[in-house]
Image (cartoon, rainbow, N blue to C red; front, top):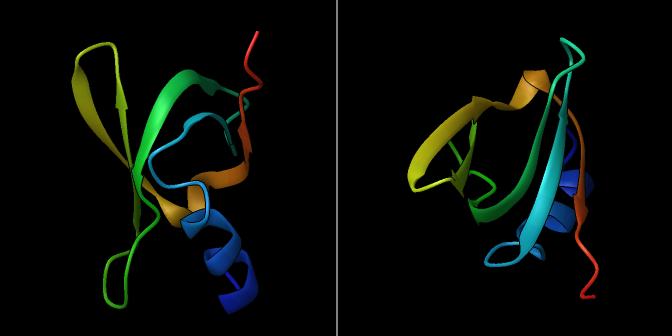
Length: 68
């Protein structure tokens, strides 16, 4: 993932997001805890009461959910 894209993802940390994955699945309405740091190749999200660590190469898109 490019440095620019990583910077964009870090701006979403702490916000409610949805994540599209390479296998066609999605993780909806979760909190982006961490978009990774040097040496860490996972996206950390909190969803449905549990932490999930998604390998960055599996992440196609991340977008912020809009408030209703």
